[in-house]
Length: 325
Length: 213
Image 1 (cartoon, rainbow over the protein chains, first blue to last red):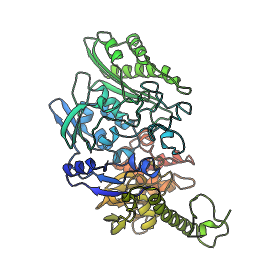
Image 2: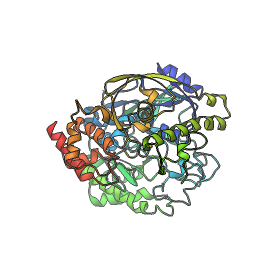
Image 3: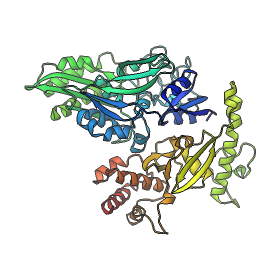
Image 4: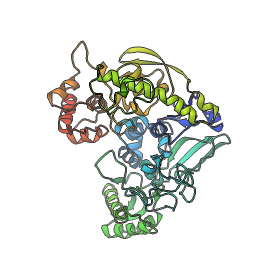
């Protein structure tokens, strides 16, 4: 690990001032420490934000507000989260391990780096790690890689589960930076790789995620997260789907669907949602809608199975959501 | 096979996995020598690759206090030191094991302020004032903790390397209320890998201790 200095921020303003002059934020550290040890990340200044008052979970009207420093485990176990937004709790519990969920913050979860093995191998090309060095995954072992949103420069998936749920639920985030505060949709945080895969998010220099806001909706309590992976727990998704349904008088009024494990960012599926509005929540409707998820896919040598697995996962997630609806 | 692990100078000690043959030193002493040489080697390496003066700041020292198994400790640390390395190398509490060193195996699980975490993925300097519990703190007056007894009774181990992590994680699992059924235990203990495959015994031990707690 390269040497660095560690600053302990006593206020949000002090943390932002440090970050504005080049320090990197560290909260749970579960991604950053690992990547620093592998020398993929080489910050020379860290600012520890764990003592800032950015934790906690609260309810404001219909909205659930989650502090950026709330830990994954704490959010998943919270009674208000389970009652108002069970999709958030379920997607959190399906991610990482109990130990990591005790450590990792919600803000850090949004900003976690990719799990592409080539990103961590310093002796092979990775445009995300070293712009212009090529992408070893495109011709490499790419069973876990993306089929949607890829480019000729990067095919890594975004690894978060809860981000898939947040994108499905139209969550927003509030950030604070040297120029003040702003709020925007969580979905807008994530960039597509294009020809600049080293630029992963839309935060401005020094900006800090301070909270996530999940609006209530008629579908919020009838929502499920299904994660398909190589083992039953503690594994990244091959394909996952978040599905939420508002059903009135036996007809789907509104649907929310997003997928993980298939896209270079959490992948909202608005065409599938639109196809379900006004339909009866049955297998045929689910299958017809799910077929629209694979529009524009670019499968690689080892991950073509995801093209078939994606609609099947969506259908099953919709059936699960239908059972609680 | 060379005896380079026995030489604290030069480039010795980069391979912790090779077996020191006919060594007059204990395996642990050899590994500590090796680890010391490797970490001494790491500082000039990082500084030499650096073009910026900030990276020559290898001597940055963080003063922190920890309470480890009830005992207060005052430490001066390099900010790069993981909590795992401080326990093992600085405090000589080698019951906590270094398995993968990347948060994937759970062998280094400890309790920090009562919560189970993997100590390899966290910087010790970020835990000023924390209360740490390791496997060494579990027995009371020479008596094993009930969960340790249950691991013996149900043979929740074969080689034993993962065991201290399994037990510390099991304590967390029981305290969280996630040890209500074998399925529950399997899911909530999934952050702890046992390559010998002693899982049936591990699940039985956690279930047994949970019932008695």
